[in-house]
Length: 217
Image 1 (cartoon, helix red, strand yellow):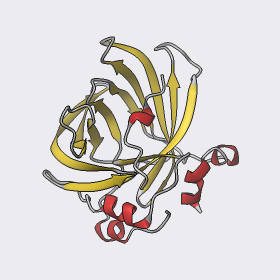
Image 2 (cartoon, one colour):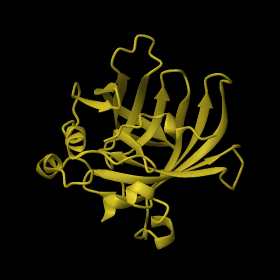
Image 3 (cartoon, helix red, strand yellow):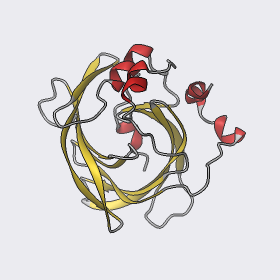
């Protein structure tokens, strides 16, 4: 089941973010970082599929991911693979989408450094979203406790809660390990691995990045 596109597809153009350069608080995960997760369906109340999210390239204010979805928990070959980019790392854009404006990327950066109560607003098409840091604490992942931030993503005007999401982010490196959708579905991290050697983005994979490739030029 392919579920990542349900995340906010914020249409955040390539530029060097002066805000991040000044703050230096955002630490993208190193290329090769891989998160294994399960997808829990609210309708079935069960873990019915799994995913593998691999960081393939990073920049000052972004990380490009390859997301592999598997139809079953024991499947070895993914039934779907696609690429997306996260900016700072809250704003999600599919690599088949137009890349963001300089203004939107700068707005995304203003939420850094994260702290309790910090908020930032973003506009996607005709919708406005707000990100808020609502908590921090420890998160157990494969038996290991990690320091995390809890961030709420909310569509302004949402009265049902269905367009509100909760992200659990590692404090360092800055990447999500748990995502809970307002309508009940959840992407739950099982384990995360960090590369021991440098990850090399091949020409073949770079050609699959579509609009995200421009971020690397």
